[in-house]
Image 1 (spheres, rainbow, N blue to C red):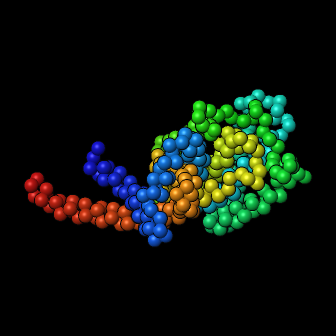
Image 2 (cartoon, helix red, strand yellow):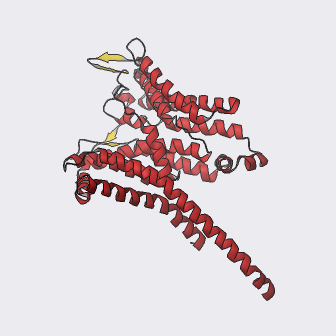
Image 3 (cartoon, one colour):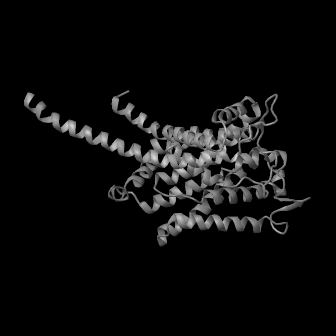
Length: 370
């Protein structure tokens, strides 16, 4: 490994590590100020993972967070801020759940039912993100504004569709899409001593991450994506159509966003979309993508950290610490990431400027020696 590559790796890891340390420090100060013991609180959080169900729950949640982060990261690579992942995945989950629970699906083979459900989810997510892409390339509307509005529209659209007159059924006090029968769901891996199984769609998330890495590093499309994100003018000079790349990136981001709800829908015990379906994961994906620096491996660790914090929150109540402490810690991590990345970026620029100056200073000596 060359010195420059080792330095690049160390600088890449410095920002998230520094952000995590700063968040732990600030959270510890908050604990002390409010009369709690940091050691006891962090000990309780770590102790939560002595139970197998918490470990499995953390892994399952990591897969969901990771899919959301990849969806956001695809946009980030193009300098597109796709805030609409939240609306895209919720709308995709609701419509794909309605299709998966429809009566005509019962006559189809199980693998075909699952493939149709996944395809519908990806198509809905891509179509919803495509609206923002269309507005951007034809009217110059910022994707930040349009995706925020699309999130709100998705919320009301779901509320309208999720009624007994349209796509939902009423069972007792619960209103949800028709339950997906056994053939339409994906099997889980049960572990002895745990009431929580391992979601097999964890492997789907890993596959999406591997595909994301492959496309970015080994394909012309990935190169065009990164080149356009670095400099639109340079991309245009190289013959890359920026508008086509914007549309492609948003569609791809939306398609991956459509998969975010699939582990819960196809592996979860509910087997339907209801008002209790998890929300807000798209925004969590933004934080995880930032923390993982949009890197396919980095986002695995940041999603794992986020999920571990979520699953250890209940343990805090056992030692008298509010579980909201975890939310504070997550917020501090995001703020610290922004500050740490800027600090590391400036430090890297100083190092590069120093290297250039040193190379220029040595050049005359080499020429004289020659």
